[in-house]
Length: 78
Image 1 (tube, rainbow, N blue to C red):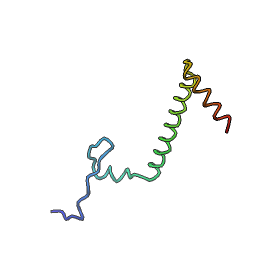
Image 2: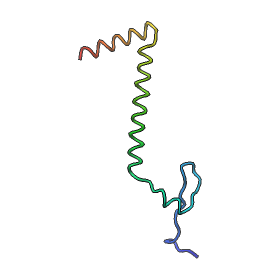
Image 3: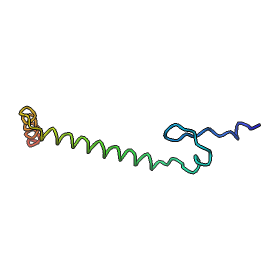
Image 4: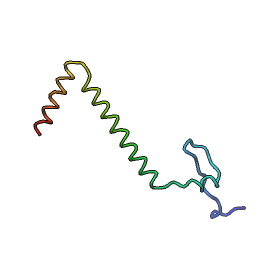
């Protein structure tokens, strides 16, 4: 019978499936992974917003062009 100190908690992969103890020890989670994931997410959402803003700016509708012209004027006043 095992004691509490010998029982290891079950490790899970990203899909929720349990993995063996050897696999869990071979792939430790590092703090660098978390930082890279946050930087990647920030870059992704920045690009998504820039592309969306470009599409709104280039949209051929008079109301959108008026709003874009006013935004350009406000930025020019700074």
